[in-house]
Amino acid sequence: MVNRKHVKVGVKSGFSWKAGQFSWGPDRVKPLVMGILNVTPDSFSDGGRFRDLPGVLAVAEGFVAAGASILDVGGESTRPGSRAVSVSEEIDRVLPVVGALSEAFPDIAVSIDSRKAEVVCLALEAGASIVNDVGGMRCPRMIEVCGKSDCGIVVMHMQGNPETMQDCPTYRSVCDEVRDFFEAGVERLELGGIVAERVVLDPGIGFGKSLAHNLELIKGGESLRVGGRPLMMGLSRKSLIGQLLEDDRMELREFPTLALSAYAMGRGSFIHRVHSVRACADVLEVCGAVWSEVR
Image (cartoon, rainbow, N blue to C red):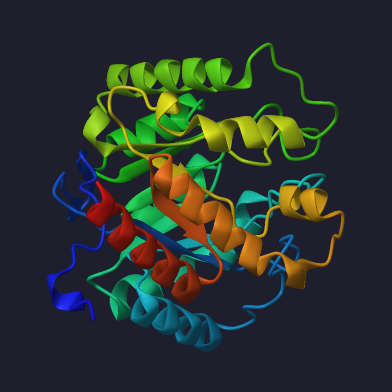
């Protein structure tokens, strides 16, 4: 029988990520799990689930107990075909949640998932430590806001915008183009006074990509990294699973999500944005233990 206390449960990350008061160093072996808290009525998977603040806090408590290191709060759906909401509406949705989470879980990083600099500015003041921008930090005002803080930043690639991104996405070479986007993004941030150590890269699975593009990016893994920055993967319940299974039922996407997350971890992704925190954290820990022993 293997004594779990003497088993290394992962391999070293090899990177540092600083996000406000939080810091994850190169000796960390467990992947970071980011729990998704969408406070929207129309998100593709869990829209309308979180209807009041006590309900959000209860779910967040479960995420933390299950192993989440980050709680990601979003107030605007970015599913394919979705339309932007107003700044005021998004602020009304996310600000009370960010403040409550920051107060209730001071040892857990709170992330704000937003494309709007005005929303991000207020969320950082309310206690958020990470900005998760599906717009890829292309907005000068967003860079200015983040540059005035010490927050961590997730730069995500998206071709087009949520309303149009799945209208026949085209690339010469999706991995090369996403990597080029990351290189330009890191350079843009550095020119804005934001050091690379605060940056994480997300290839944006499902954001302006076909099934073939998504699979290439998942397989690409380490090749997408720029300047040694860590990769985050958002694979949870994505439509590519329905395409592969030829079945769109959401309840069938949980086990494939875990399989893809484990594969992505093996290809170098160290941060995983998911809906089912406990299942993902357990799978990644078990896979990490096996890989550390093999390597």
